[in-house]
Image 1 (cartoon, one colour):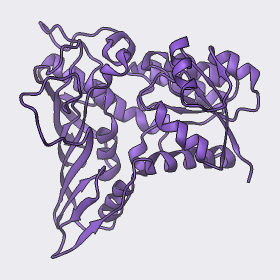
Image 2: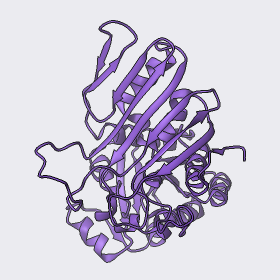
Image 3: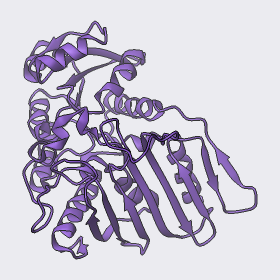
Length: 358
């Protein structure tokens, strides 16, 4: 089987460093080149010591390397559309960062141009390849906990703004400056826009789509222009009720702490509790302790490393390119998740539940 020739565009997304080791160490992949948004980004990349050609323009990179099969679009959110246009122009398959765009009309144009160019576009939702999530899905689909009644999930992290300032700029992270709600000085584009995973996992686990969402923001714990604490409730079309917390409520070094704590929580978490008619599943997706409470002493544990999901995701991307298959997490699948997230912002603005058919 031949290697898949891959490149990375822009290198400005917070997840991009995860790809360096994944691409470099994977024998299925031939890492061809990278493009950088700025000279500073280029210098930072050089410090990693990889012997990879660097370009200051994505189009220049694509012109210089016609052998490229696929491109990881690792640019800021507002640049995704332009990068997709370039990839379609040069006939390159794409792995897009987790939110291609929050503009739903633009999103639909992305779907159209990808189909017209006859290329594939996978979306970076790496939790699909997390071993804990895979086990949870297996249990749910086996009927082990019966019909799902409720889904409670957290996707809590520190704020990436201190390391990636563009994520604190609403025009870059959300695409434009949209006030959270009347009288609020903050804008859309913060914690909610950074955390699509539990919104996606809810659809994945329940096998249903959103009926309505209701979202509220708390006061910020940081001095930034966007929301950093937000909570979402609602109902799926199959009747499952849910509660989601996609906040930036972990502390980073630049966040003031009330005391000098001796205990340091994980810098991020994806946890959920799924209640069914026959049992309960509780999972810590970034830790070794998980349990299925459908029966006495019926427990499950998994040994986990953070690169598991990146390896699985890249394996699927390569397999789809080599075998001309659509990835399971494609643009069409992800649109409903992105729309639900946009409706959460609409709910914050209106103070009311928002139904998906409105």
